[in-house]
Structure formats: structure tokens, C-alpha cells
Amino acid sequence: MIYGLVLAGGIGRRMGSEIPKQYLEVNGRAIISYTVRTFLENEHLEQVIVLVPEDWVEETKALFARDLGEQPRLHVIAGGELRNDTIMNGIAYIRQTDPDSEQAVLITHDAVRPFVTQEIIDANIEALKDHTACDTVVPSTDTIVVSEDGKVISSVPDRAKLYNGQTPQSFRLGTFEALYNSLTEEEKAILTDAAKVFVIKGEDVALVPGASSNIKITYPSDIDLAKSILA
Image (cartoon, rainbow, N blue to C red; front, top):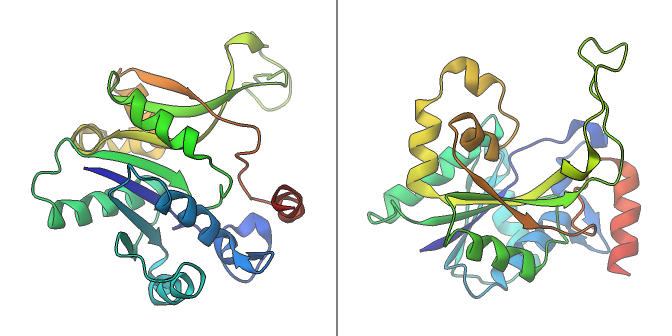
């Protein structure tokens, strides 16, 4: 089975909105609806599970009924406090409904990246035929500097070796679950995404080419950019 997990458990305080940013509307439709519609249009995904703040579960179901209509493959459940907690909630849900899910493929994606393409999703699925996990990336176009103390530059890495991470991040359910549960609390505290779980444990993570248009809507100015892309 191949599952799409759309991660929408965050609040998005940097947007400065009274509602989570994934529910803001762009051209008459919620951001999250654009993202989920793209996942539903992918013929390889047998189920699409959307994980949202617990208080928003019923409202999200009503929103999808309005924006997307009846979708038998679509499920809305509560996410967790942190990103990987949300993924683990998704895994627990799949475990309950699919007893043979050990080797299930999970395509995890930010709800606020509404411009992911079918090609990127398909490339993630294809990468897992030969790799344990994969991460969607684009080459860094900026020079990145490292500062150990936040005051002066410590080093300037070779830009040719640097990439900006996007999503989807994809992996097999049983592998992620086992690796995550083996982490110490100190290791869990430094996690920023799912791919780092594999890196910490010495597992290879394949690179999948992303796209410059696969933006993450984080700040108010990103809403204007999203409107331009849709136009």
C-alpha cells in the first residue's frame, strides 16, 4: 500500500493569522485543499490521510466536503504536538486499519506546500524501490555561512554540495517507526524533520529533485506569491 500523509498539525504563528495558515484562502479555496487535491489526483496513492490540529478535525472534514466533494480515499485525523509526533499518529492509524502495513510506503508532505507536482510525488515513490528513504530537494542558490556563536562566520561550506530541503519526504512505515522509537530523548529534541531520523541512525536518504515552485507558505508575502503562481 502507498499512503499519502499530508501534515497539517501546525499553527503557523509566523503568518500572524488568527487561524492556522493551512486554512487561509487563496483565490477562494483553502491552501490545504489545493495540496490535498493534488495528492488525490495521484493514481498511485491508495489512501490520503490528512493530519490536523485536534480542534480542527470536524471543520476540516466540512471544508473538504465543500472544496473537494466526496472522496472515499480521504481521511482526516488529529496530528501530534510536533512534526514527527504527527507522523507517528498517522502510522498508528494505518496500523489499526491495515494489519499488513509493515512495508507500506508513506509519502509525507507539508500541507502548506500546495504546488507540489505529480512528477515529484511519483519520483518519491520510484526512489523507494532502491532506497530506505528519500527527501525532495533543490540545489542551494545562495551561499550558506555557518556561525558557531551567532556573531561571526565559522565556515563557508561548498555551495555545490548544499541543497534546500522541501517535501515530500518518503519512507517505509516499519523502518521509520523502528528508527524513531530507537531514538533517545536527546536525539528526538534535535529533530527538524523526518529525514533526520534516518541520518541520525546512519541510513542513506536518497535525493529527489524538487522544484522552485514547490514553495512553503510561511509568511504573509507568500500568499501573494501563491496567488501569482495560480494566476
